[in-house]
Image (tube, rainbow, N blue to C red):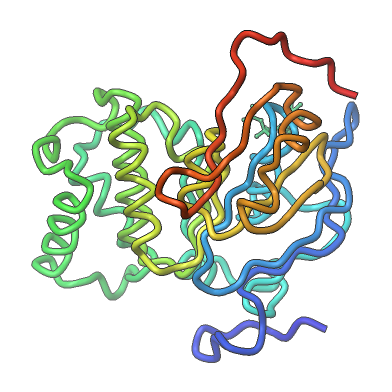
Length: 277
Ligand SMILES: Nc1ncnc2c1ncn2[C@@H]1O[C@H](COP(=O)(O)OP(=O)(O)OP(=O)(O)O)[C@@H](O)[C@H]1O
């Protein structure tokens, strides 16, 4: 049985950070997730992979409680997430979604300050100087200081993505859920973003389309196909040529990256994609 949640009794040692059992979700027209189960350990960086439309965002939405599973259970450090108060959940879990918010007439600095709300309350805001020091530090960390006074809505897709990640960092979460964090980013910022996320030392679950980036940065990979989890393990266990062919329908050569640390995927661009089973 999952125990009841208390911020002060956050038990890092005895339970996995995230535990998903028999998770299914669908709507009238379609069953999207089927009996998905996995665990994520404290401090692990787990990549959620799979072709378009297999249910990666849907799974993340269940993890951050935007969707309620039809079946199955999700536990955060041993506690069923449905029983955790909104405030305690916001202190533990930060989310960056694919599209992010829009319609904000706020500057980047003002928008980032809202990321501190999880750690303050209406009767006790953080000290103003402390707030601006934290915002300043994160602006420097994600190299956005020059955009601090720009309006959030005027930013490019990539700049916006970096602001959303910066805001999530200000929440100081223990678990970070990222839906395609490298979307819109040029190759340098793709690398910098994943490096930054990795360097945080917190638990991360991120949906990623680029198999090479996932291979380089993730401790473990969960591979979804048609709403089911078809593989889970180290990048070298999951990212095999056979599996890439059967799940994505493309031919790829998989060898070790020249640095000898993780698999490298080279696609055969000339061959047509296979029909998927
Ligand atoms: N609320 C919903 N109502 C109906 N169908 C939905 C809903 N949410 C998701 N779906 C469907 O579920 C499927 C999976 O969607 P999801 O966004 O989770 O896929 P994904 O793996 O994240 O895809 P992508 O890589 O393209 O972002 C899609 O076919 C989508 O249309």
